[in-house]
Length: 68
View 1: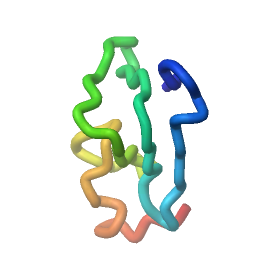
View 2 (view 1 turned 60 degrees about the horizontal axis):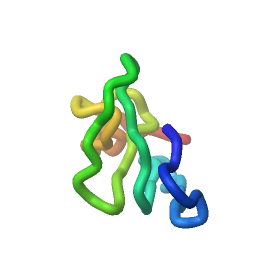
View 3 (view 1 turned 45 degrees about the horizontal axis):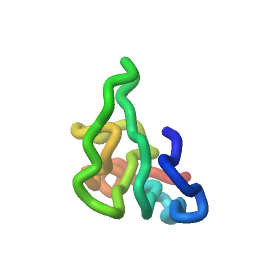
View 4 (view 1 turned 120 degrees about the vertical axis):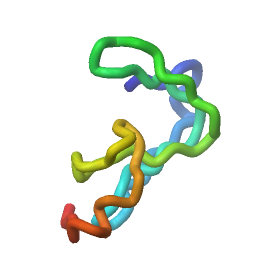
């Protein structure tokens, strides 16, 4: 993942035992390098590895008691 434009406009916050919250415009790509459209200014990215909608968080970390 790389920031597009000015990286000062991107903020990443690691939620306690949860996702990474990314605020700002980013260039998000799949493992195959295909672009993933960013439809919101803030996205939650999975850190537990169990989300059904990777790379995005679907809240599964709560069900599996994920600890960062």
